[in-house]
Picture (cartoon, rainbow over the protein chains, first blue to last red):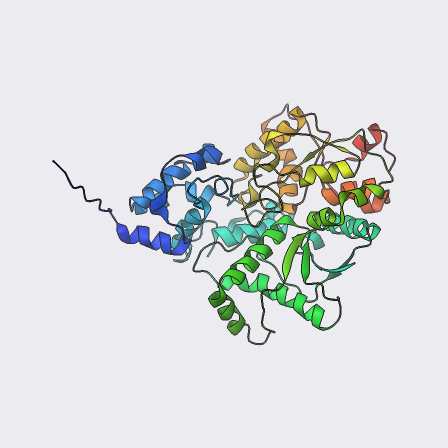
Length: 134
Length: 298
């Protein structure tokens, strides 16, 4: 007997939106875990990059409450190894952009200490503000 | 050879010794860096979302300056733009690639910057190491005046110099260009695991602890590979691996400090340039004592 299974997404609109912003075909992720195994930040994350991909694939918007997307520093260690040619860092960026485009910043510039202000090079500020503020 | 040069913000301030040592070393190789006029910030990190075009304006505007320099005769038929900072290199090259491959995006950018000359995608963004490789590392070797044979050097590639594929200057997994460069300078490159592990980048702003943990792993791995010092191409890596050593020491009291210098400082040292050009005083961990202990006079 042939049994037909219809796969439906919990929230397909969310998945489509992330695919549109990131330009990545998230549905082609095999969940092989190479990204999680390559990520130098994985120990600091609450969910691994491959779990993040899975949650996006399932349309789980609560993935944006996880720390992972904010810890990804776009080092591209996963990107060069993904057997499906996916760029996970672009998915993390798309997730960040959903928040940032609503003017919800990750860091408050006014709260940076005076010590850091004098110590950090501008390259750190520009990069940080570009990735963590709107 | 005269080549348009993009310095970027940090090379004019906290990493001035990076620029100074690069310009002086390049002169020894008969390369003149011609700073592009009215350059602006590249944005440091590449704009990687598909629908974001506005953040490509700044890098592309810098590329238009290169076309202007050719038009005005400041340089002769030299459409390559040289970068020293690997983050600038990565950002400029990624924007360039984006508009070369998407003519619609290029048109939007050109229309938006209607007061500028149109950009045609003809500029090529290159890193100083690529230029040296192209000239031939044997030519670099001929300029060596101070022998560094007693020095074991760990080449730190980081991320932006070699990733992603299509942007990086060498193989993303097994790069060799930095090792070849160090060998040409008569020093000994060490083989080590963490040479392309991320230093934590901008997380130094809001997640210092992550940067400390990554830095500790990278630096101790270089020491385990018996490196005397680490060379880098990026001012942000330099900050995270050099200046953050005081924070690493606080968290890991047994940690022993190791100098982290720019690749051009090593080049200036090998080329026999003066101490004020090599300028180890500007690095957080001063390499002067190490260099002296290795029998190299500076």
